[in-house]
Image (cartoon, rainbow, N blue to C red):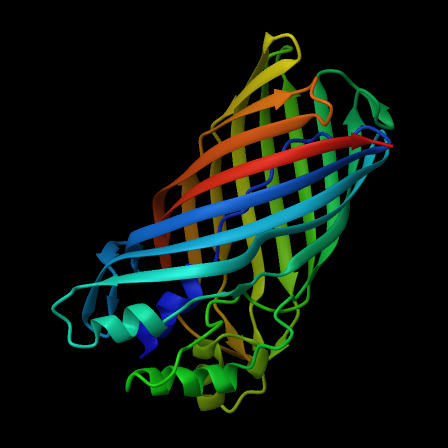
Length: 338
């Protein structure tokens, strides 16, 4: 059972999709995002960091896919402060498990086993400290910091009921719905951005993010953590923190009147510590992943509603206790001036 639940828990964690450069919006500018993500995996990284085939209690899974839709709203408070409400990953709408057709319960698993659910919402603000219009004026370097809170969105999720549904699924009579929600915990977050501007076309970006999640009642987590906390006699699950580090060379240039082309190749590292049940640490539940995420975007500045279109492909390089998941990420951004 643990292997199947692990599929559900890890599958719905989609990589962040927002640009991580040390810029902010101009004063009075509103930017909205729509971010659809198609994700698939045929392997997972085990506790030793080795890539393994995916299996459900020994049943081979050829491929796992999902579709997630997120979004955001950002507003330039002034020329060096932006406020934001970001929801990416957002809502996972569909999940599909491609099971070997010779498995007797193949159709039951494919039709009923799901990893749907909403992720947390980030609410915060970004401050440019060093930059052309920042408190510390500089044209060569841009430095920014952001802070905010994570608010859980799966208000009606009940891990106890989902575990019962999951157990019933083995007999083909129930669906383990919403089993792939993320941490579903309140949290505090901080971000740091630094750009070195080489010239008008090139800059190099460093980005880091630290999220600390508050302990959450076991009934509001996922079914594996609920089960483990129940066995440990614990009331709460403590996920600890999540650390992201990223480096990106970035190129942009005007290719036509009012049309800007941008290309970036970020390398992203994400890690989490062992999960705790009350104060007891669960060994070998720590994770890390390393991705390269090339992207290309076009900014159409002279439309009645200026828009930016971005396409990104996330390719896994290595990891531990995570899926070797490929993500195809599209962003549609619209700009409005008030």
